[in-house]
Length: 235
Ligand code: ADP
Ligand code: MG
Image 1 (cartoon, rainbow, N blue to C red):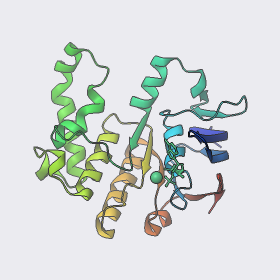
Image 2: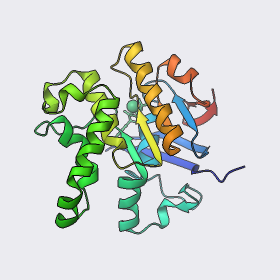
Image 3: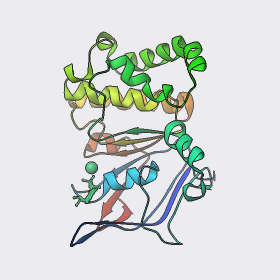
């Protein structure tokens, strides 16, 4: 048995509004093995996006001595700012439910962006051709080579979704966290995207946690989990 790549234990998350508090996660536990493909199902509002944001290190669980997220056996809570930034930017690729592309940049620039963060100018100038090639290659694999110079606000929802996936993969992360990545795609395109992700898993041991409503996608995963009442169970 491998050491899990990602673990979460005892995660609670409550959103506190002015008068009320909304408990969303109530003790989530999960272990993800290297190169595993796991899908997460759950009703709208069940906390799927919340959980992915915690796993990506973009938000923190409720404070508790028992709450713990580890990547490669290292607790995120023990990482200093720089290490946590590297975790978010290099180790994890995040596909947001609502894409979060930058409208004023074109498709290629959007996909290159995570690779440009944190690099100093000289390194960047030297590496630019290689980065451009890597981003263009990924966009090509997701069927977007004819759209490289289009601004992202000129794209359809399904095209934006694919740019967001390419962007999440540009730093060759070990872990892809994808929030309903095929929600705006027809079945054929959705299936082709999963084919490409499975190829990347073979090529670079990509580990995937995918939130989805898509039964066909779930059927191809190694394992399917379900969030109900704030906890995770095997589906
Ligand atoms: P899902 O992705 O499964 O649809 P979410 O994780 O987006 O669910 O949201 C879970 C619940 O938490 C919902 O009831 C939502 O309204 C609430 N919620 C999400 N984000 C916030 C926030 N920033 N502040 C307050 N409530 C939130
Ligand atoms: Mg969501």
